[in-house]
Image (spheres, rainbow, N blue to C red):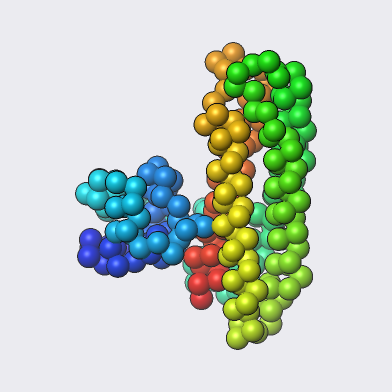
Length: 224
């Protein structure tokens, strides 16, 4: 999809992420928040971060046509609500429920064994535990209240619940940013043990999954 510069400037980050194949990878590269802050206008977001407009637009224009606005195994952007919701639950909700317990265990182990190391992510176990509790409650509300409303064609009554979910998405996004602070910018020692490396890799996967999860809901499912 070809978007002239003037058209891009008038679009939000969320709209571009949903409509331009591969845009999410470009936004991640330039640290542009297209999920929790997807309602920012493209031009304003670039100015706010002091980014080179030509460089970012050039990256968007040269995207590989084989890339996709959604993860490769996702249903098409025009899929019906029920299909999209089924995908969200199985690909992201179920995945998060598997990810967190192991990450919490790994974080506790690293904090205990490497407490004296300057890069030790102190407080990460507690942060992940609280984050998992918040996200679990959020996902349950979606599965028990909002998603059934959407699947039953009750969108006229969904504005309130959607607003609550979007607000909570912002909270989850801040929790992700806090992980970067706790982990000293996601840095680990050159000779880190396997447990620390597994934790580092798991956190990177969690960040990628949660960002895609929020993007899919905010900018595609909820934006309808």
